[in-house]
Image (cartoon, rainbow, N blue to C red; front, side):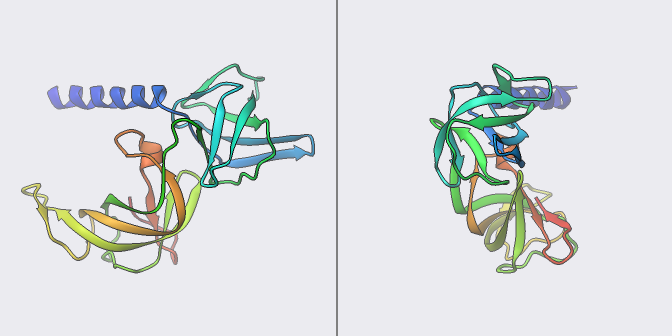
Length: 208
C-alpha cells in the first residue's frame, strides 16, 4: 500500500497547493448577451477570487478589478478552484477566448519559448522544425520543437542523448511558439503547466 498511499498524499498536496495558490482562470467564453452585460466565463484552475480583487489579463498584461462573480444560482462572494463562473470587470478591456485572468500580484510566466518534458504518443516520430499545434487550457497556438536535450531510458531511468522521440518515449524538448502563452511549472499547477501537442492535418493528439 506504500506507493498507493504516497501517490494519494502527493495528489492531496498538489490539490491543496492549487486551492491556496494564486488565481488562474482560463477564459473559455466571452459572455455578451446584450450591450449591458459583458462577462468572462471559465473554470477556475487555481486559487480563489472575490469582488474587488485586482486581476491581470494575459498575455496582454492589462489590469482591472472584479466587479461581480456571476453563476446560474446568483452572484457569489467568493469562488474557488474547480468552480465554473463568469466574472465581470470594472473596466472595459479587450479579452478573448484563450486569455487567462490571473492574480495581478502573482502572475504566471509568459513566453513563446520554453523547455518541457514531453511524452510522444504518435507512431510517426517527432520531427524537429515540423509545425504542430499546442493546446493549453482554452488556448491553441502554433508550435515547433527546436531540439531535444535528452530522452529517458526506460530500463535505467538515465538521461540519454536523442535527436527525436518515438512512440511512448519521453524526453526534454525545447519548444518555439508563434505567440506567447501564460503558464506555471507543472509541479505547481497541472492545468496551467500541462499541454497537448496536436497534428495540424489530422487534429489528433500526438504528444503531451
